[in-house]
Image 1 (cartoon, one colour):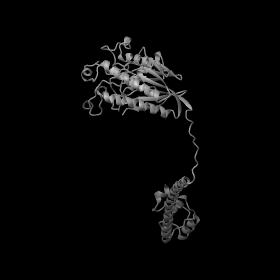
Image 2 (cartoon, helix red, strand yellow):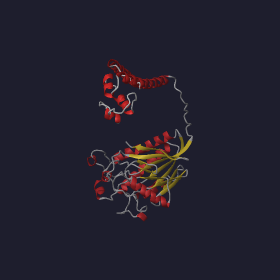
Image 3 (cartoon, helix red, strand yellow):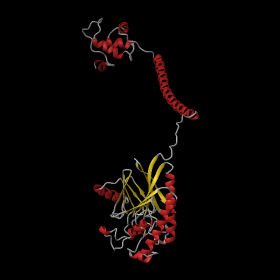
Image 4 (cartoon, one colour):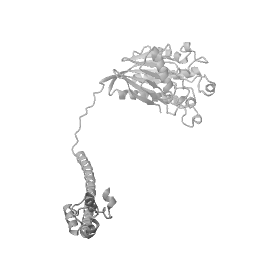
Length: 401
């Protein structure tokens, strides 16, 4: 700090000072000011001879830089700085180019690898019929006596007795095709045909009384003949045994409302099922299971199926579709008696889920489907397999058109 305060000014008065001795203050002042002052100026300011000042500067190794030399040094420094800057820039560019090269080399190696002979693994086809399975086909919601005028469903569907017969034929022929296709990979000895109800619309609503093509007794006779023809077709075009599970729907009732405790006895469909069982009583390959209650349980290889029409599940539309009320109902029923899969109908919608299968309809999109806000779907029924030791496997719609 003392040197800065004395810079460019004459040092402290030199009274009583020996000329041959340099004080610390003089040395500090000289060191601070020798650069921008000449030797004579320094000597005069310090009260010393020029020679004394030069000797002290040599002693302190205080050398001046020639302006020309200084300018040359600055220029050299700038050149060195620019060279270093260029080197850093070049290094960055090199590293980037090196990274790009490595990426291109990797891509080239991949292309070369692909052009080489690939290393493949050998896959052998499974032997046909190495597993055992049971086929399940569902028939429901045919509503053969109901008429669907295309104008009432935006031209999406049309239905009358002739169309019902045509779709019924497709049901049995396409079911047989699906069974045959499945038999390429599995031994299928049994077909479970689930008759899940609502084969007729009946006259339970006033609009049905006005619009149906047949009276209830005529309609149930009509369906019975269709089913007899179809069962014969399955027997003639396959070597499988038939187990026919029979559940009534809510439309076939002879009462104004559903009588839960006597629903079976008040159903025209139950009467039809008895007639069918009587008709095939001498056929060893056919077995009828006619439900006495709402549910029918069937054990297939230890895998429990629960059949019902589905009208006990309450659904009035809403986000999520039928899945939420269906799962709630299944959870409650499983508290009493557990089943692995519920097989039902009623909603005219095809669904294949892990724990339930909902059948479509033969009548197709109609005023009922429109009323419950169901999504449009073509007329279809359901097919799936139950594999021994594995449970429900392949599931597919049975197309009717």
